Picture 1: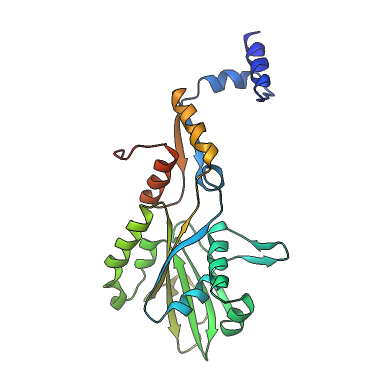
Picture 2: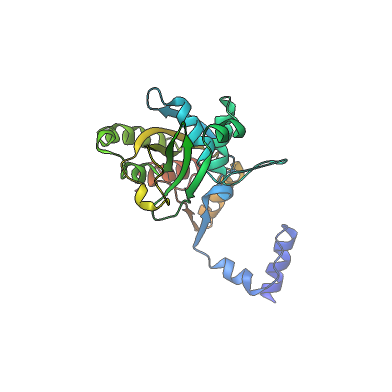
Length: 248
């Protein structure tokens, strides 16, 4: 009877429960875990900042347009919000899918995975071959050649500054071949030259901020689950009111 009465009161507040025991379970909740992208944030990625190696700006734009799994359709771009943001930015710089594919026809690709945290695509380019590599900053730094390893600390410091602003940062690299490298494998992701970096913002949902406040009032701790760098995740959590500045 108590459960039914509670369920009735929740219906008046536009919360419908199919199973009455769920009301009792909800009353004992102490933690709520939530995905970040599209749940706590708007899932509307836009490129906020960009930095390229001197003289490589055009090549970085081509890499942003080609190194992804985005599909073009009559309804617009289809794919991961991070990748569509990169493609949209490259198009805004005057590129098009046709221009990039004509200049850099793709031969093979290595999809992103959670262990490598990188994606690579192989293209023909002016009688040679070029490998574009995109990935998490630390994971791409791992495969840089000895020359660009000397730049790694400076670029990682910029990454930390951007990440602390709540931006999602990706590094880009490239590698040229005089001869066709054969079947593309993970082993090809080595001796990569640094190309540049891009930072994107995904604004928090305004309504989530109030929901988190209500959870705190009810003694419920909100937990954000994300694949972002810890420093980026903390910046977003601060905006949402999930943590305080001095929290670890």
